Structures are given as C-alpha cells and as structure tokens.
Image (cartoon, rainbow, N blue to C red; front, side):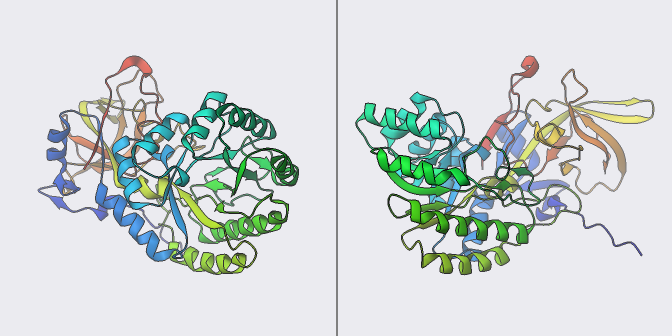
Length: 411
C-alpha cells in the first residue's frame, strides 16, 4: 500500500474572512487597497519576529543569530530584523550601508562574497565591519587598503571545507568552489596574516543552503566546529568569531516538511560545549536569511485575462518572472515545480479548475503555475504566491521588457 504524500500547504496557516485570506491582520483586498496597485509584495513583521523567537527557544542560549541581508534587503525589513537579531551579514558595500543605517554596531556586521572590489574593501575597513576573506589575493588587497586607510582591517577567513552540506539546495562548500579558501590552504593564509597588520577575528564556514534534513545540518555543524578547533593552533590570535553558516531551509513543495530546529539546537548545544574547551573565546554565529523571512512574505498579482487554448485554461496576471523569478522555476530549479499558489479572494470557493497561471511577459518562461487545480477564478481576482519573503523582488530581472514595477510593503 502506497504511503500518502504529505502536502505542504502554507495557506492553511492563515485564517480567511469572507473567502479572502487574512495576512498581517488584514484581508487580501484591503492589503491591495493599501498597496494602491498590483503586483506587490507584503511582508509580515509579526511572522518574522515569531520565527526569531522560536529559533531562540530551540537554539543554545550562547548562540548568536545573524540575518543575511541578501535574502531580503528591503530597508524596512532589514531595520526590523536588526532590532531582533544579534548581527547582520552583507554581500556588498551597498548592503553594508543599509545595515549601518539600522544602528547595528559595526562589530556585529560582516561582509562575505568573492570578488570584492578594492573600493568596497576600503569602505568596509573604514566602517569597522568584519571582512570574510575569500582568497589569498583578496587578503593581500585587504592589507593594501588597510595600509591606505590607516586602520587595521577586521578579518575572518572564509573556509571552503572539504565536506559539503548534504541534501542542500545550493552547495557552497566542498570540492572546487569560488567561495572561500580551501581548508588545506588555510594554515598558509593564517601565516600570511601574522605578517600583516590585520586584526584576525576568526572563521566563516558556510557549506550549503536550503536544507530540510536536520541530520545533515547537525553533521555539517559538527564538522565545522571540529575544523575550526583543528585550525585554531595556526591562528595568530585566539578565535573570537566563528560563523558556522546556516543552511536552514523552508518547505516550498508537496512532500517537504518544516525543519525540526529543536533537534538541531540540542545537538549544537553539545557541540558548542565540547568545542568551548579548545576555543573558549569564540562567539558562535549562525547566519540565516531565507529561514528568517521566507515564509513571512506574499507576492500578490491580479488576473487581467482568462483564455482557453486547445482545452487548457490560462490565467494571465499583471506580474510574472520579472518580479518573482524563483516562482517561475528559473532560479535554481532543475525540474520546475509549482510554488504554493492560491486565489486569495476565493479561498472558500468549492468549484475547482485546472489552470496555468502566466505573467504578462512575451516569453514562454513566464509561468507562475503549471496545471494547478485551484478555485475557479475570474478576471480581477488576486493570485497569491506564498513563501515569497526571500529571494523574490531583488532576485528577479525587474527591468526585463520594461514592465511596471512591483511594490513592497512591510505590514
């Protein structure tokens, strides 16, 4: 007998009023009125806060939680996150300026990413944030910019570990990677740091992202901590910061289930206790983006046409992959799967219809839903795409075909 496939249905987490989904205490039609247009993104403060609070309950008390701004760099979102997390991680000088605007102390802000420009390095040094070094060449470039600025750069080595985060959506460690310095080359990089007038802070070990398997995350965290301990003997000064990355995923598709963070926290507490004997001064950090904000956002677009082509129903909306590339399946999916989608003002409609939802762009790639069974919809109805709080607006080709822009609001 076949086991039933577990369905991930985020719409069941929200209540409805008169057939309309309620988000952040407001019905969908009211949200659309507030936005003054479609398409738009809506992000919930309360859902972000609840996620951080739950994570703090499940993780060790001494663990520091950082928000990776690249997941959603909307300034209002970053400001809200800065008020509830312990630090911010950026991937560019522009993101750094957004982070500094929040009032987050520079000592709790870090910058990672390959190919940092000399001017970006100079900006980061002047601001006093920690730079995660991605290569020997970048280390020498930091030293030059540090000498030019007259300030000792705060640095941590980003390590490309020999291991990877198994079952992760994107593998960022293990094998040949553009990220970080290969672990076997780290001792020589640490020796070079001893020769330079730089302020060594510690390590950054980010092995993968979008993972829903606690065992894989636990294993990667244990290996990351063990690697840091092994390399601590080569460090010019004691490790003060150890960023073990993130990898925490959120469920998007049928069969995927929410991550069990409690088991991860219990295992991490033990790992931190063991490592504390060898690196007692190290502040342990996890760096999360999608996990903190992804489920706190909706993308809303309006149906502007309905047509039947050779027996298939097409709902044409006023927004598409230009605003939400990930939902179209063109942002890392190998085999396209539908994001969780609903007709937001017909949540209780019993009549169903199998439809294709497409955007207004002149390309066959502009698909938001492929052959999904949804409540019967008409022109003027509102389509919702859930799990849209991360890698949505800024991860999309917003100028493609010069369509009108989407709006973002934090509610």
